[in-house]
Structures are given as C-alpha cells and as structure tokens.
Length: 417
Image (cartoon, rainbow, N blue to C red):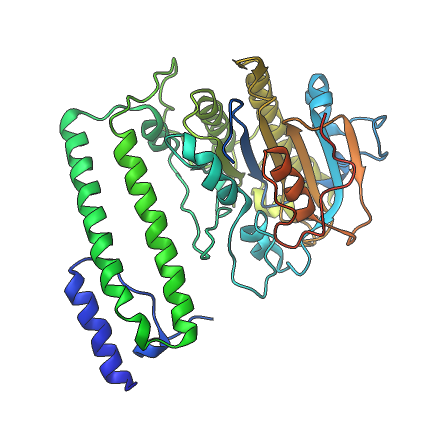
C-alpha cells in the first residue's frame, strides 16, 4: 500500500467520524509503530505504595514465624498484630531502574516490555460490576500504579475534594440530563468509530490487525463504562455523615494521607467501589514535626543518623494514619463480618532500599482479608516473585487464576484462615 494514500485514508477516516476519537498509529497507514461474581460476601482490595522505599530496619523483623518482636513501625499496630503479615525477600524479576520501577509495582511486567494489566485493574474488571465505580485511584502524593490490558495508565483523582464530590455529591436534575445526553452521544460516536474502523481490517498488516484488536478492546471497555454510567445516574448517591475535606497545602503530607484514608474507608463502607489504590509521596518539603529536609533527600540518607531519624518521622506518620484506617475498617460491621475481614490490603514499595535505589528485597505488608496472619514470612532474596503474592491475593478474593505476571505459583506460607 502506498504510504501517502494510506495516510490519506486514515485522514478521511478521522474526518468522517467528526470526533476526537481516532485509530492508533498503524504502519499500514503510514503511521509509526511505537516501541468473580462476588456473591453474598463483598470482597475488596486496597493497594498502597510508598515509592521512596521503607526504612528496612524499622519494618522487617529480625526473626521469622509468629514469635517475632514487632519492629518500630508496627508498634502502633500491636493490637492489630493478628491481622498482619510481614513479608521480606520478594521482588519483581527483570524489573529495575530504581524510581522507574514505580509504575510496575502492581503489574510485575519486566522493564524491557510495555507495561500492562495491574492487579487492581484486573480485579476491578470483576468486582467493579457490582459498584458505581469499578475502582478508585487516589493520590496521597503519587499514583501511577493502575494500568489497563492495553498498557494505558489509569489516571488518579489528585484532588481529594473532587474525589469526595465524585463519590457523594448529588448532581442536580439539569446536570443529570446533560450527563445522560453526553452518554448517549458517546455511545453513538463509539458505534460509528467502530464501524468505520472495521472497514480497514482487510487492508492492514498482521501487526496492525493486532493493534486494531487492542483498539477495539479499548472501545468495548469504554462502551461498558458508558452503559454503567447510564444505569447509575438514576441511582442516588450514598449519604455520609462526613464533611468534604478542607483544602490543604501540597506539603501537608499527613493531612493528604489522612483525607485519602478517610475517603477509602467511606468508599468501602458505602460500597461505592471495592478496589482502591494510592501512594504516599512528596518529592520535596513535608509538614511533619521535627522534619526540615525534603522527603526524597531523606530517602537517600547515606546512613547519616540525622537523616535516618527524620526519614523515620515521615514514615512513622504513614503507619500512624494507616493504623487509623485499619481500626476504622475493623470497627465497621458489614453483615456478619467487619470491613477489615472483607478487605485485603497490600502495602509495599518499588524500592527495597531508597538509599541505593535497589529494586530487590521489597518491603511487603499484607493486612486484612481471610488470610492466616500474625507472622513474618522471609524468603531468600531473588528466589520468589512478588507476583506469587498477587496470585494468592486473587485466589483469596475468589478468582481461580493460577498465574499473574511473572509468578511461579502462590506464595508459600500465606494460607487462608
């Protein structure tokens, strides 16, 4: 096919649709190819990442099994000890690059490959069928953790206030009519775009047909969201006895985290979603008592005692707020169980050592759900993929998958209660 005529065909396609939606770049058209039904018991997933690492000596116990002494960061969680499992020695094979590994922490996709399908989005495709929102990507400073099958990042709600309004603020009748109109227009646009795109299939190379298949997958996912939006627009949003979060300065990292944790609890409590992700991060200065150095610089502490002391203040602030979230989930009853019983929580980092940028021996905490907790599981570094834990999480949530990412099985020692 002549590239110029092919490109003209692509342009005619775009002009014919009259909308912003367009086909991906295809080599055949002169473009450039870029290098469980939940049943009666709702189950939920919360994924949290601390992208700058977690100071190992305050996180990993010196002993394995159930008789370990609680590390410094877990002392505030003493009363929740039997709902926690600390795991050490896990990593994502062939994932490196220091901070660059952040976006792959919940995918496990090797760094040399295009990123795709994160754990939260895979779970949300099933659990999200029962809630207004498939998943909720929040930002306590960072969130590039959610990825679709096609390798697109799921954008996060960076304003906690906007996220609160999205979950709980009722739209007026006029706005609902506008939304319904936009949904209807969107559905007709997608029908037209897909019809036009299919006419190109016979003229494409095998590689481009694969790309077009990915495009159709995206269109179908969009259609599903449109249909779901149309159904939920008629349903009143849940009423909560909570005020919208007040504005705060970017460096108020504790306030940001507290708001995100509170919103997570409310989202699960009202069953607005069953899948939430967020990250705890601030590049520069943070408002934490006793801290006057930027968070990122502290993570590269160079074994300086003063820097380590300040770093631990920042990280202890996370575990203090995390305790409140766990306590709220435990104290919230849903049917015959608590929200903590029905929520599996993973806390980890893409860095085993923020000081050296190592992506090995990652810190991992598993909380809640139906696992038998109260232990420290230690694996020889390099022996066990972190994705083994993801398979165990999937099975505990009711999925029958035997693999995820680079897994070699389930995580040994992490059994159901």
